Image (cartoon, rainbow, N blue to C red; front, top):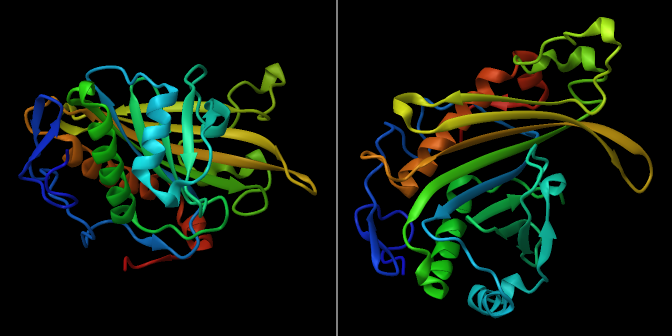
Length: 283
């Protein structure tokens, strides 16, 4: 059971017989730090996920599914469905997860063999509730998971992902405009006649002090609405790392990863795009 609830870093996390001490953050960063980049009035952010992988694989069955539904309560009265790479807008090609969405449609939990993720969904137009709120939901889900599946052992890895959807007609109209993301370069193979339709790219960087990895994925997708097809760029920024490092823990890692993602987005995007999304001081 998670003994202290959200925001108490010095107690002990007990998931079965294995204990993991939660150390204070060591990134020099706290919630609402004044030196974080600016915020946006209408950002392209569409999903945020906090996840954990465990020492033992998560064995999913109907009994666990029912028990988890009951443990989470009436706010999670929907049905479980399978989620693949396409729904995650990820370049992974194999992993399938089970997802449960809350009755408001703006929170979701995804279970896979390595562990689970808790996320915010903004597809219905809901406003981003801030990182602290999502972190609260992750902690509550972690408490439920460890109560129902104590055999999982201790957390091995943390991961956090910010997913941005950037439709055509906003900060870009054609691939020539994709330079608003600084990693983008014009098509390097023009003599082959290769078009950018369906483009997918991934960049991976080590984080400081070998604390993990920062992965940036950019994909161009054609989507179909009720009226007309439309194109979008999907920008997914993921930070991940181990909980086994001497100066790290699960929650320290998540907070550290969130900081790096926020800073990475600010570095990646041109001032013109930031202006379009309403860049302003942090609140």
